[in-house]
Amino acid sequence: MYGAFEDMKAEARVWIFQSTEFLEFEKVERISARLMNFLDDWKAHGHDLNASFTIIYNRFIVVSLDEASYQATGCSIDKLVQLVQGLEKELNISLLDRTQIAYRDHNDMIDTSHMMDFRAALENGDLSKDTIVFNNLVSTKSELESKWETSIKNSWHKDWLPVA
Image (cartoon, rainbow, N blue to C red; front, side):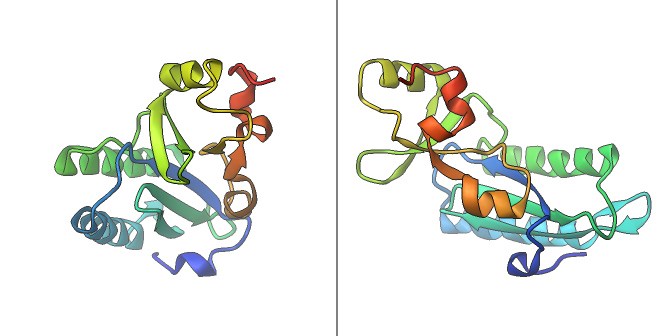
């Protein structure tokens, strides 16, 4: 059952699907329509799931689920991923490429880079430990609001990047 994202509880579970490109208005509209229809009928073992979504910066699709009413199952999560895969094909976009790191560049614009290129940019000084990255591993709405946009030095990224 679809509801407003703002009304989702702080503990609501989130999944973040990152586009490697800025999503133009037409793509945002198509994604929104498909997600509203999907989430309105999203179920787990016949139980309605209280879910919502938002699209942030025309680049990040955030799906949220209030698991207090009923938890997502493997099958229901698979259906969500299948929807996202369908959107990738339909709109010729990439939403599931986990090798891409999103960050704010020197002009405060959001960019993405393959993890190896991102690492090279850190090593040669084009980026620093203070570069803002998007931690798409956050798992709740409250973490999305407080820990999603963070500097590399405060993110999981620091565990495998050359950050002093």
